[in-house]
Structure formats: C-alpha cells, structure tokens
Length: 294
Length: 294
Image 1 (spheres, rainbow over the protein chains, first blue to last red):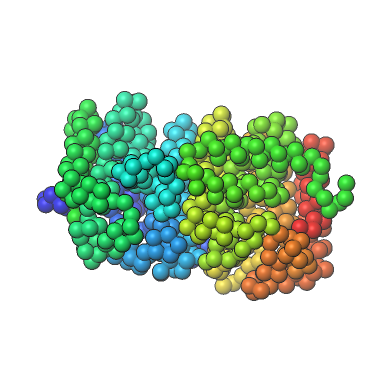
Image 2: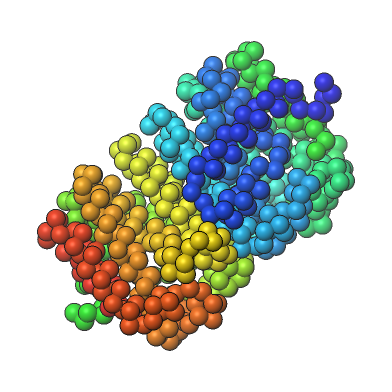
C-alpha cells in the first residue's frame, strides 16, 4: 500500500456509509427534483472523512459499525450541505467539486439553496428516527447541531471576517479553521464515541484526537492548494491565495506548515494510545491524512 | 376590539416569545456580524403566528406557557430561516419584508445565506438544551425536522415545480400550500400539544385545527396579495400573479376563495370544540386570521 493511498479497509466503510445514506434519502418524502439534487450533492463520492471517523471511533470503543451509521450519515449530510452553500456564486463561487460541476452549476442556484437547506435538516430527522436509545439520540443531536453552528461561524469568519480586532493573523487563521473544518472533524470523533457508548475518558481521548486531525486536515489542505493542480485535486486550486485568504503556507511558509502537520499527526496518535490496537484504523487514517496528495 | 386587529392578549405572547428568542441567540457563541444578521432576521417583529399557535396549543391542554417557549422559539427560527432564503435573488428576489429591507439587501447575499443556515440549525441545539423531558425533547425535534423538510419541499414545488404530471392545477396548488406554509402552521399546533403533554386525542384535535388554519392562512394570503397595496402589507404585493404562480383567486376566483376561507375557519373551530374555554385563544386567533387585512 502506497502511503499516499487511503487504507484498504476504507473502501468497505465508504460502501456501508453510502448505502446507508442512499436509503436515508429514499425514505424521506421529497419531490423528485429535490431528491435528485440532494442525491447529487451527497452521493458523488468524496473521501467520506467525517463518516469514516465516526465509524472508526465507534469501533475504537468496542461497539459495532451498525451503531455508528446513523451519526455517520448525519454528519456527511451536514458536510454536503456546507459544500453546496459554500460553492454558491455569492459565497466561494466554485464551478467544480470532486471533479464534477457543483450543485448550482448542474441544477441552478435556487435548487442548490433548497438542496442545501434539505441537507441541513435531514440529519435531525434521521437521528430522531434511527437512534433507539433516547439519551444517546439526544446527545448526538446536540453534538451535531453545536458543531454545525461552529462550522457556519467559521464560514462566516472565512468569507466575511468578523474577528475581534485584538487577534493576530495566526490567531485569526486558527480560529477560522478550528471552526470551519475543525469543528465537524472533531465532532465526527465525538459522535462516533457517543454512538458506541464511550466512557467520559474515552470521549475525551477521541475529542483530543479529533482536534489534532481537524487542524492537520486544514494545514494539509492549505499546502495542497498551493502545490497541486486543479486537475489533480478535482477542484479549483490556488484559490485561497487568489481570494487573499489567510492560509498556513502564507503565514508560516511551506516548510514550517509541513512540520506543523507532522506535529499534529503525532499529537493525534498519542491521544488515542490508550485504545491499543482498537485504534489502529484511526492511526492509519491520521498517517494517510498527513501524506495525502488530494 | 376591531375584528381586523389581533386579539389583545396576543401582544403578551409576542413579548414572551421575543424575550425568549433574544436570550436563545445571545446564549449561542456566534461571531458578532453573524449574530447581528440572525437577530435582524429574527427580531424584526412580524405576526409571530407560529409561536403564538405553539403557546395557545400548550395552554389549551392545560400546561403552563413556559413549557411552550422552547418549541415556540424553535419554530420561529425555522420560519425566519425560510424567509431569509426565500427572499434571496435566486429565489423570490424580494427587497422588502415586514416593511424593512430584506436580510440580503441589508447584509449582502453571503451573510443572508449563512444567517439562514444558522437559523436552520439553532432550533435543534435550543430544543436539545432547553427541554428537560427526554422523550418529549426527541418528539419535538422529530416533529420540527419533518415539518421543515415538508416546508422545503413546498418551496421547491412553488419555485421550481416537480409535480407528478397527473395532478390538476387545484391539486398542485393545495399540495404546494399544504407543504410550503401549511406544514409549519400545522406543526406549530402539534409542537404546542407535545410541549404540554397532550393525550393522543388532544394531539389529533390540534392537528386537525392546524391543518385547517394552515390552509386558511394561505387562502387569505393569496386574497390579500391581489387586493392590498404593498405599502399596507409591508412587502411586495401582486407578486404571485406577476410571477405566474398558482393562487386561490386565480383558480377559484375571489368570491369562492372567500367562501373557502370561511369554511376552513368553521372546520378549525369545530376541531377544537372538545377543549371548551381552554381553546378560546385558538378560536379568537382563527377568527382574526379569517378577517386580517395584512
């Protein structure tokens, strides 16, 4: 296995998550045109990082994969909603996503707004209906909604600013990324822990892991944006710089950004040491994320 | 009291709901610019029909108003989110709402998209945190998410079509309105019933009431759109006709639309007869809705 390819078992998790997602949407009573746009946004492939983290975290605490799937599907719906709205002309104005036309290019802006709204709502109905344990269901919903709000706050900071004036550029960058991408990635680990009935110390360990890889993901994303072609990434590259956005390479330089990525990877792996071999998947995923090229 | 003025006690409910809403937003950790846009969309006034229905339905089953406020705030947030996104240039392209510039006119399109997204998410966090009884909390969340999805489906039908070909114009109109406005109004009554610990037969009666007044609201809205000035309504009038949308007056004519409104009002009042005087507020609200002029 090349170190830049995702671990081999990843495909099996993706297949389980995709099947669960497709069924979840088909069980909702949506007009055919809305269902088509929702499925387009949701089932185009992609790394499925967040649901994979949910599944691996549930399995790390010794529970079965089936217990993770409702929350895994729910967080992927939130991620898809955020991409659809983030790609809109009034936001990042992106034409290309996962090598395909973005939702508004394919279906028009009105449908993209509505499909995003549906994807922002579906997870709560899905969790309310699919998680049997009432206390766990309620915790999952609170966790997901809080992370989604943090993500929206991060999108706001990234797109429109709104920082306290006292913050340095580096602090602004970290705050943006901790909320914009970090919140959902951290939450994926927590959702998996809660789904699997984690103890409080297991939840804390997985939260620490999630915080480190959330930042790791964004540091690597920023590095790829300046070092890889759009063709390779399947989305527009060099766009952060073109938009004048703060990035790790622009503030720290490429070398120091790469060192930061390595440090975050070590921190993440350290946090989940107590799980032993049950966390092998999380360790492999973290190592892959540090060296991925797209 | 003029029959075209809302009942006098309505102002007290609005004050309680508004105070609860303002506190709910202030307790969320949002960037200042996002909080400003969210508050603008949420606290501009308006009829507060949906939260009023939640409160009156809770009180009709003999419970205290405080028990209704989390769900009352939650459904008003969903309503505000739907207005903000519905007003966007790619949707209905409205400049005026409640006599004020719409959210995107005031804060720009990107912020309106993000504020709508925040308002679509806040209710689940609010309900998860504020409703003490776990079973009730879960039912409220499921009810609200299902109604919100139905509303989004209705917006889709209204804006982009997507009907089964076999449906007549009247059937398309009813399906659109039952989902676009009807679903949230019906749900407001159900949320109130659930918040108050209603029996199944009380829930069924309030659901029937909610279905009738949901349709009543839309029939009257359609009538006002062709008979009142924009200045009086505080929003653009005659816009349905200009957009070529199906409306009750365009399909039934004005006279028959008015007769339908009277019939729906009688049906709503009949449905809640079993509550006796506990439902006086719901009866007065229904009568007001039938004769309102804005």
